[in-house]
Length: 117
Image 1 (cartoon, one colour):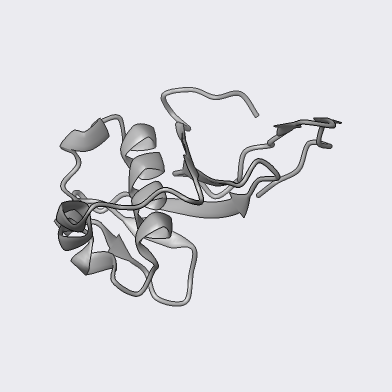
Image 2 (cartoon, helix red, strand yellow):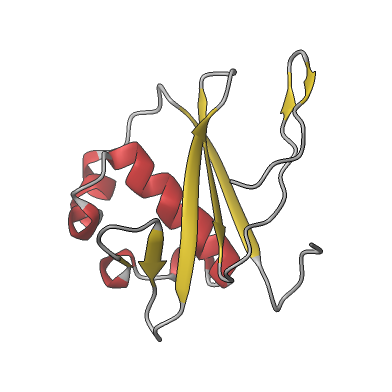
């Protein structure tokens, strides 16, 4: 699948050791069912896929219970998956269509086989 404006993909990677500031945690209150780093990386990946970047209001982002999907203002939905990388980082990938993107993740010992999240 090719990446395009029609099927945007957003990616965020943060060290698992990253401490999310208390100011950001306050903004993440609507996403409180998730730990702060997971919520932050989901927000960052969705904001990039959505195209608004940090202009996307966190308080208007809602998780759809029982799914890996999130809704943004305007009603568009994004699927988000997280993977912990061997580097001690947390990867979040967001996309807005039903078909997940194919990913091949470079690792210290080579490149993983392409897979769907």
